[in-house]
Image 1 (cartoon, rainbow, N blue to C red):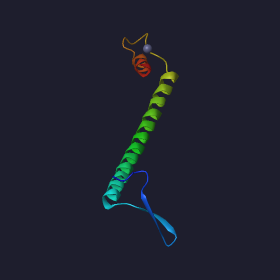
Image 2 (cartoon, rainbow, N blue to C red):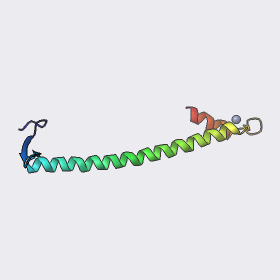
Image 3 (cartoon, rainbow, N blue to C red):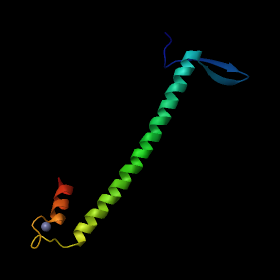
Image 4 (cartoon, rainbow, N blue to C red):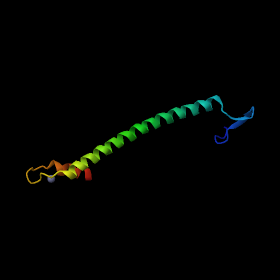
Length: 87
Ligand SMILES: [Zn+2]
């Protein structure tokens, strides 16, 4: 088996080329497609995470800017949400 780090090279008309066997090329093309799919999925996940963090920060701002209802409400939603965010 050929060393994967040292592919065969050829110079044609003064330009250097890397030579791959057909199955090596197919594996490389498949790996590139898979990498592209993973990169795309990662971008979508990053966007979703950033959107979730923006919403979370908006909730935190609301909680910081509003008063609690602990004295009048037995199960204070304000404190329950704040506690959940800190857990
Ligand atoms: Zn409360």
